[in-house]
Image 1: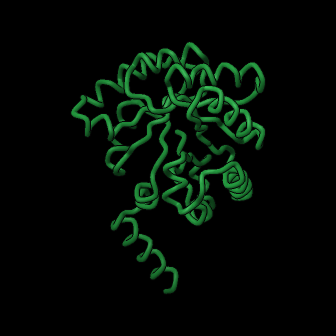
Image 2: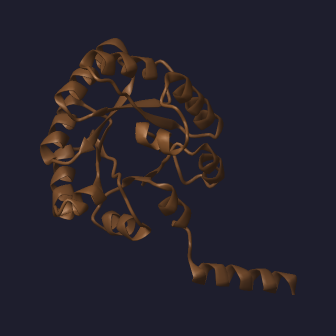
Length: 215
């Protein structure tokens, strides 16, 4: 099982890192904006330093650009921040072109193909050899699609070398449901990450243990 935190809120990274549950964090320009930060290379460099300092083994950063050339150039700059960086690129023609250039120039850099909505995109990510393909579960549901059936097909299409990194999750119940279907890699938004360990019964049991210890 692999869990990541889907936010650019550094205070939450620090809070959750000590649990040892999360292996890394995922970000994108929207999450950076929501955290009140500017989407710039300087910001991403600082986020990288903070993630590494918190003990995370990877930080996923999404490239951006209005042209394929700019998208590729930014991907290369992100890769140069450190070996912990997994560069995210959209599973589009421009995104795959950028990923191909990145592989040629920064061979060891891992890539996540993101904005996945169709099994064909996963087949392409697996054929490329991407480390991850990131489908958006709740967004598929909200678009009226049979998200469970689509993810099952994606899981088969991914093979063994490309992991499905399930994103766009709204509740712990969704994570449990998808885990029961065989999925093993999730990135959790703050509300889900913070409620993962919540259990009234567990809290009651711990209180009883403490009371017994005090005699």
